[in-house]
Length: 599
Image 1 (cartoon, rainbow, N blue to C red):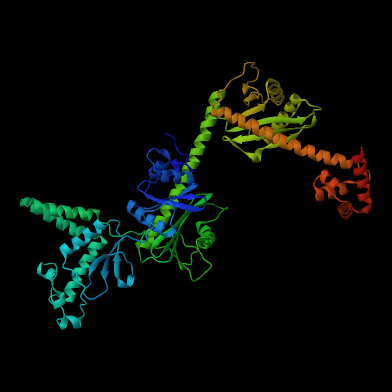
Image 2: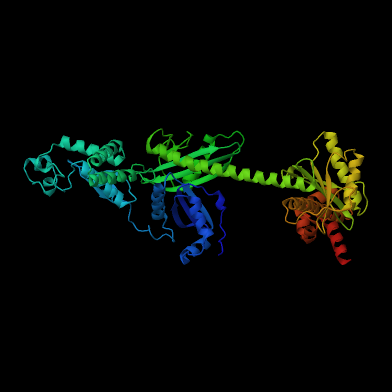
């Protein structure tokens, strides 16, 4: 059984309920919900046996993954529904239709009715929901109708119609489910009290009702009425499963931007959500690098405009956890203190906090890896302390020309490029690698001595016993030979040499510590070669122009500034040269180029 390669590190995913979104480049191709995002997403890549052809094709198309954390699986299901209807991803087929979750409505009329509907027109009444289960919704309606006398008919019970005796009581009255307001047998005041009680049930204020059921169940059981007791127990179970509404879909919340921020010293973590028609249809989390002394409020102030433009928001209200200034005075910035608006900000902050936690976790893992590698290197080389500061030296020359050397520095297992140094060889003539190595090591640590700067924990010499011996001579002359551990690495067999020891150390080719030494050696070689090529290129240009009698330093500088190299000077037209350095000097230069070309 093969595993598909995941486009992200699955270990970083949250063990939280939420929605995950699969993208192919910038195109959203699938939206899913999960009780545990990490487990659900991992299942796509960790198992292939039993997956449908469509699922395997989906996995191959995934370029990257985004996710939104919510408070419950219920909220995740609702948000999934919103995002699928909004974006119509090609691999989602179950929720693409226009069918929506059902609501409970208390109608806007005299003697209101309570009924289920999939419409959400606010002018028709007061809506509660949505419900992810029709059975749960029907159970709530059944509960209300068993407790309260609420009419189910469609009669228009205006005062005139009731006074005129236009309607007659129906079967519901005769079986005890209605008190007959259609014939004036129940007052409007008494009826509205029943509706108010039913509203509490719908909103989830269930403690009083549940206590009543518990008492009734116990009474029935004591009186050996077990069937009646079971009925009450079933109703209690219905109450336990009941959820009145969610902040993910709330029809009263319209046209809102939600933005929350949390930060560290150098980074800020921001989550942005857009709410349209009571539905969260966009959620995006960002990591921002902070400038010196930049506050959270300043970050939000500069970021919110970009986010609103990016997602096409024209909302006049921005909910946030930090008050900040906004250029448009017609846009209101609010830090809500209660209600569903506060819950939205808390949800946004929850996502930002998770990304902060994720960043800290990654930083800690990186630090642990660095410590692990340097700890392993200390053990492999039998050092007395962890080599958190390592310096590596290399020489570079071609046929003895432009001899140079480099020193690269690694701190905590990573390159510290601001501490890199390159050297021009001053005291050695010709291709003398040993002499060059002694010179640069001496110069480097002589300077550190003079500046009273800290020495490294380890010196690495790119070369075998000869280069290592030369470097040790330099340290002896400075009288610091015993203060700094030093090793040499030979390229051919990757052997590690110690001073005054003819037998090399062989570290396992799979060892992370050897890979660190190789990385140091390769980086020093690259840095030296780059410097050598730069000097050689410059010397070739300068020496060729130096041979042109009548061309001085200022003219050479003008030519090199304009044409960059001697090769391009030769390719320039006479008109270009005349324009740059004048007719007389251009004539001298052209004659020199022509003479060189004929030789």
